[in-house]
Length: 161
Image (cartoon, rainbow, N blue to C red; front, side, top):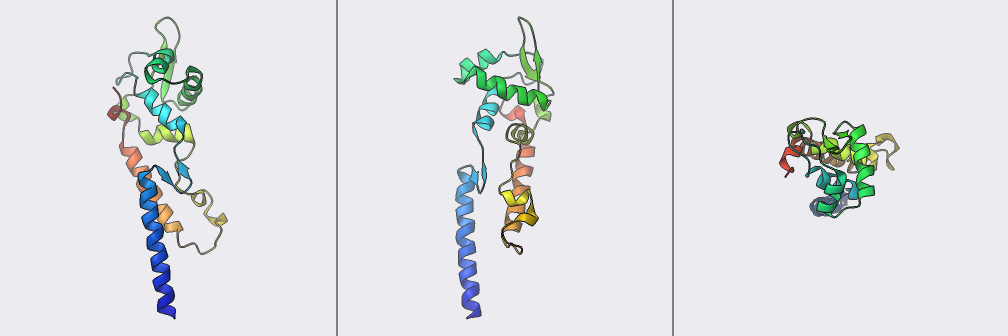
């Protein structure tokens, strides 16, 4: 009976992991889903100068990307507060990168826009997880580590036009 129980647990864990892999490929992992903030924010940033020397107006980015100017203004206010972009006023004003694109990671951008890229809520407060002896928590921890490593390695220079 004991080995039968282990086989069932292994079967369900395997099914869970297979579903997890499928969800990763669709950009949804547990509670993690990138919103339009991330998508539009990265699309908008891809229009900026790689070296951060030339400012680009949000109106121009909105036109080129087909995005709402008001929404971009809110996103760029957040990116400015996170020291990812700098705003410049005047006729030739707009936004430019605060640092070189090779020094800004996609992780930094996503965390500024989303707040967190955790794949499961229990990683925020592991002691409040619904079960005290959670067998799945190590899976979320490993996944979180790999997500963070991968997103940290991807720099904005790879997506800039």
